[in-house]
Image 1: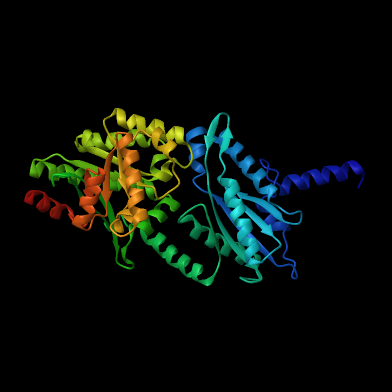
Image 2: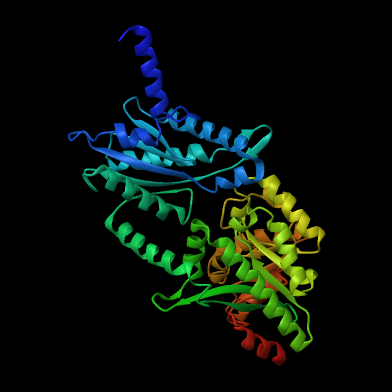
Length: 432
């Protein structure tokens, strides 16, 4: 083979085993070329970029491609010369590191999380992302490469529950994964089998009158029993089921509360939780407005409840969407403020009406000075921004009285009522 042919052959081989966008190794390299060396222990990091698809949905693939290039460059900076870095799929990377020392692995995982968490500035648009990492080790966890990769993938899905986190594989993670698979399987037929239903927790004003209700979805399955929303919402988001579930929550809540309002001849707010996965769906705004119109529900009595992670990526896109809802007289409530990473500057930008104090602060407000101070600060910030303050998790009169003295005007919790089914809610309202 002459020099020219050899050069051409190398170019073809490079093309075959490298990713066209980032020039990292590709999936084919893992399948065809990578071989375990028996005396060389390694750790496999499975890295997934959280909520990456929303960039493509809201700004197009060119922006997404530029972000992926930047992610690749940041990962390369953390790579040793004998390590392998692979772009495994769209927003997934595999990092093979020839080190199985737990402290070293944890340190590298923390560096990856920190690096990928830094803002991405693409064509004057700023994105803030995070990633979820799963780690498995050879030969500690398995001696077969496909098993190592599968275990790292399982660990990564554990990290996905909280995001911006790493998980090192162990047997307990495997057990969780098997349960998750069963839940995923049952969830697919939950709506068809009429296993999902809505409950409503009353929200009360300082005079003891009904202000509104928060709609809460519940799931009871014949094989799994009662499944906590914390568990199945997360799976719905990860598997693409959230749109169907979200539509069910919105339509059912609008229909049932509309019926109750007619029966008791009383108008009140309906607060509906909206997932980040719903927000990034194409035409979500149009579909939501159509659902409200079709139900006959008074749009002025609709509150959309969002959490801080809605704003994790494309803040400008979310702000414009929220502004559109407000133009239609829909109220916006920010739930769980103070439990995440959002800042005062973010709060100033968001077109919200209501700030919701998380139950975790309310639980020990009577005994914990830190929680008390945190709540005082949150209420002070909210009042300075002319926001309505709602506290959830009220279980004692003393909690309510203290919160009211700080400036809280709306309350929700077991002190007033547990979440109620439709018929129970009607009885509760008629007693008021």
